[in-house]
Length: 227
Image: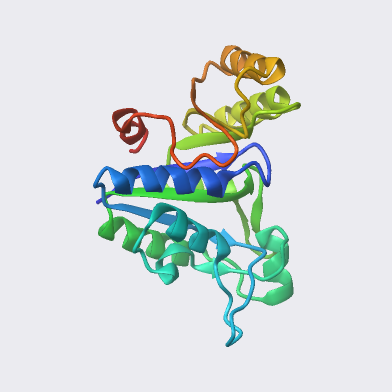
């Protein structure tokens, strides 16, 4: 079976999919059998026959040069750009944990390293009706350790520390931080790195500049994050 790692973020739009793409790309370039999985994707477009295209999965596939079929990557795909719990309330097909587990296990059986991406931030509700499923339930059910993606700019200290402390309170293992949209030499962003490390006790494992096509982290360190 595979070794796995969960990618979460301090908020929506901090670049989780972009970073996940760089991670999978680096693994594939180093001849690792690398797969991708996301339990639920919202905000997707339709193709010519009306079928929903899982946009995040398509991005990963193209960015990483992956041959993994799109239909393996995500069991729940929604059109509305809302939290999955609300999108499924409007569109039907609410998330079922048994389906997620079965589909995840199939991916694990086909790849040596599986990168799992979350929806939104750590408190994202995936289903909230007669059954309540939060993002943290996916992480715990699948037995995953996590990597935290944060934006480099103003507000990062607060969002990183709050997310890290919440995850610790829920006994969710957190391996480190990747900072996205980083500008070397920017005094605010450089200080953010130091403060996030000091206040959380976590390492900033890599800083990613706008448009970066390679993740600045050695393959041994990267693979050691997977369990």
